[in-house]
Image (cartoon, rainbow, N blue to C red; front, side, top):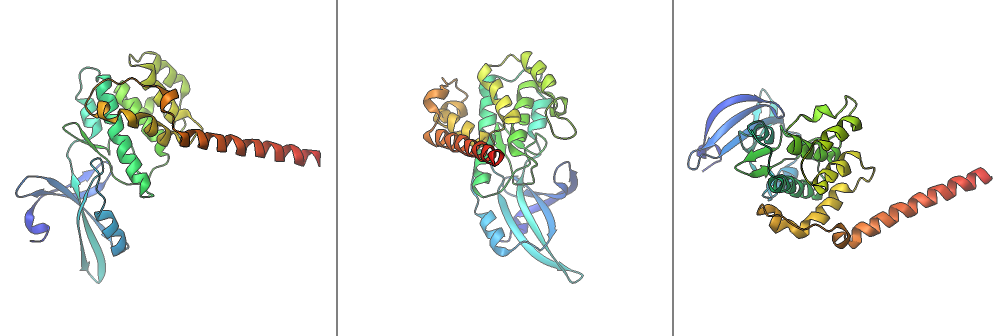
Length: 264
């Protein structure tokens, strides 16, 4: 049985992030899928590699079909789909979200990001394009202007349930006055709030990897919505320290070279 034989077409919608897509529904279990039609400039190898991606926090590619129309070749790509986003979830919350749940959602996103980065891809991280289904997070690959900053902005929205545009300027810089004010009003732990600053304001481009390494020892507690005792001094990996030492060494070399040129 082909993919389409097991699905029924529902409707065509214009999705805020995905553009115009067709929504399909699995006949047996009701799972939703969406179809994006593109010109066939994607190689079979790329499609095969993408179809083999398996991660609990990354949208699955279900099928792909090649077809021709008016002597032009097109490809229909079918992905799993959820009709609720993280933004929808936040809008529907009348009370502040428990900190254990914020850590849970943040860590799920972090896991998905690390997987996508391992495939040399990026993800457009914003609450309107992060899928949410009964506590489970799903992200997908896409263009990103700065994944580290975007991840920090998502965490900001989780903590405040306010739009990121209260602190994000038109030129993609952060309004630190607004951020500081809003974080002073925030009732969550200093550790959680610090992660927002680490991601949106740090010049260290390895913050996603560093935070993932720091939180991974507490994965079970985080995903089970349990508190955890965090110790940055104990859990900073040797790799993190080595990377920091290398960056410091390169900076020293730059300064020495600059001083040498002045001496000449």
